Length: 128
Image (cartoon, rainbow, N blue to C red; front, side, top):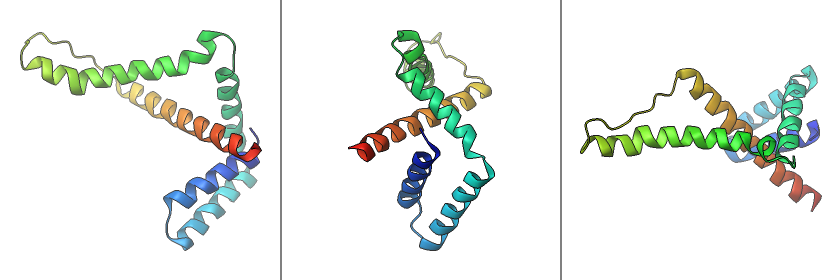
């Protein structure tokens, strides 16, 4: 994925998120400044890695991020949905701990997944 596609995605996201035209223009300017400073090259490299993994023919290479995210979702569902309900009837209901660093990893993983899926959809519609 090229920097142009990332900028296009960023601009579309800004259009949907920021209603005030002046603030939107400021945010777009900041995005262009990041591009000129070279700060988006790292994002471009990350997106290329995620895309290559997702397109891999090897199951574990393509599925390790979704499997990791589903594990986190299971832990969160257990702690905030299943455990409270079971604890009403069962004193030894299992609660799984999620260390703070794992929350950060979850946020990064979900962010990468959302950006990757958005980029994939924009690229398909752009090519189509």
